[in-house]
Structure formats: structure tokens, C-alpha cells
Length: 360
Image (cartoon, rainbow, N blue to C red):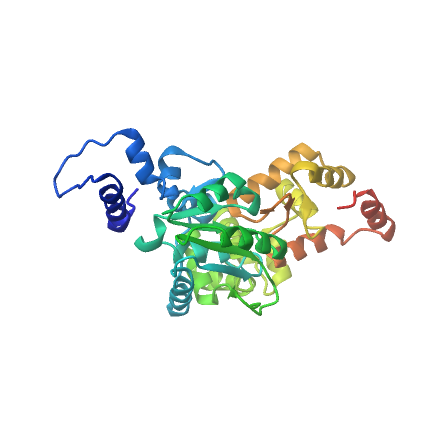
């Protein structure tokens, strides 16, 4: 990994100031383990990358390597302006910022790309959720005097944001905090940055990157139904690539497209649609009994259904974890799947399902 000349220069400066070790161009200096460890502890992202100090956190390049974030990043003038504005919010020392938006609108990806510059990338640690930023990690960031870190925490709600902000207030000046979370209102609350999704033209480009042989007109017909959601656009594009004949059957309108590309007869999607029946479903720890009960009530094997949902999320990021709970993303996909699932239910069947679920 290339952590850039700035990180290397700071390590050299630290060695010179604390240990009177001056490293000149072309000079070979042998440094003992304790001295080097003390010099490097200010850069936890670098230590995480090479030594794995905390398995819950990802360095920037590891975060970028997640499959759901591996598609080419699409940008135009508007996106570039968003990136520049976001970087300006993040760059100041000890900054704290919340990035919000509707599920599936590309919040995580735009933060990833905003941090992809030499001044920031080498210092990034990414947590999939608030619980992955462990007490040990916070204690390290609070106790290490010269620490340099931009901590990014995903799936942050209002309660978690308040808690993380309190932790951040106790850290050293070199620690920045970026929190990412859902907010479908379209209005950025005070102290937050709102992500609005991608334009139709950018969605077309993203779709054709995934399905290169797809005609532009067909890609545009898919983009039209995605309501600015890159996540949904990429999911439909993969379905089109796997079965190009579906394009000929595509009718205008959201429901027609989703019915065509995402049939509930698919066992994976049937499991996912069960999850979509609730705003979020208990998945980990003491809350996992909720998903087990839900799948059993619907006639699914809980172990198999959970495996299918987790595989879909690993591939597409469409069933993310938020703490102990999992939900379907984006919202338009969740609404479609839930509506299709309950469409043939009687009132009695709906009552039986709701009565069978444990309380949160």
C-alpha cells in the first residue's frame, strides 16, 4: 500500500524528534522493534493494514475491495462538486460529520471516494457499524497523543450518532469522525450532508459498465425506474446481463420492471422479500430470534433463508446490518418485495404472521 509522502515524512519527523534518528535520502538505518512500534502507533490505519490490530476495522484499500463497492465509480460535474464539498468538511483537524440519505443512494460509496486522496486515504479506518468501532479502538484513539486517523462508521442512527460524537470529543486532535446513516426525508438535518443519489445519465453509464452489451436505450429504461438509486440500478443490470432476453419484455413503470427482473419465485428473493415485510428484522445476538420466528412463520427454513439473505447482501449490499438488525435496501426495493409477498394474503394470514413475531 502507498500511504504517500506525507505519512512517511511524519514518521521520519517523529523518529527524529523522539529518538534523534535522522533518515536521509538513500540512507539505510536499522531501527529496533520498540522504537519503530512507538513511531508507527500514531497511524492505526497503517498498522491495521499490515498487522491486523482490530479485525472489525478496514483500512481504506480493504474497504474499497469489498465486492459491493467494486464497480467503477461514475461521476459528472455535480458528483465532483459533492466530493469536493465533502472533503472540505472532512479535512479540518478533529472534524466530525454525518452523511445521510435514503437507503441505496450511494452514501457509503461517495464517502469512500471522497477519502481517496493522499491527504486522507492512508489514515482511514472503516467500521461496518457502530458496534465495530470497539471500546478498545476508541481507547487507543483517545490515549495516543500524536494519532492520525479518519474513522468512518456506517449504519449510524440518531442514538448511535450522539454516542459516537461523545467518544470523538475525547479523542486527540488528529482524529476525524465520519458517520453514515439513513435519512429518507431529502432534507439534510442540521450538521449533516445529504446524499441524493445519481442522475439518470450516470445510472445509464453504471448499468452499461455492468452489462457492456446492453443497448443504451435498454439501459435507460432500467435507469428510469431506479429513482436515483445506484444500488438498485446495478442489481437490475446484473439480472439483465445474466438474461438479456428480459429486456425485450420490459414495460415502462417501476412495478413492471421489478416484477420482471426480481421474481419472487427465485428462492433468494423469496427469502429477501420475507425480510422486507418489516422495517428491520432482528439478526444478531439476542435479537436473532425475530428473524428465526419470521422465516418459520412464512414456511422457510431459517438457516437456509438467513444464508440466502447474507449472500445477496455480500454480492449487492441490499440487506445491510444496522447493529443487531438487518433491513432491505433501497427502500423502493423493500416496498416492492413486501407488497408482492403480502399481495395474496388474507386478513387472517396477516394477523397470524404479526401475532407470531416476538416484540422488539
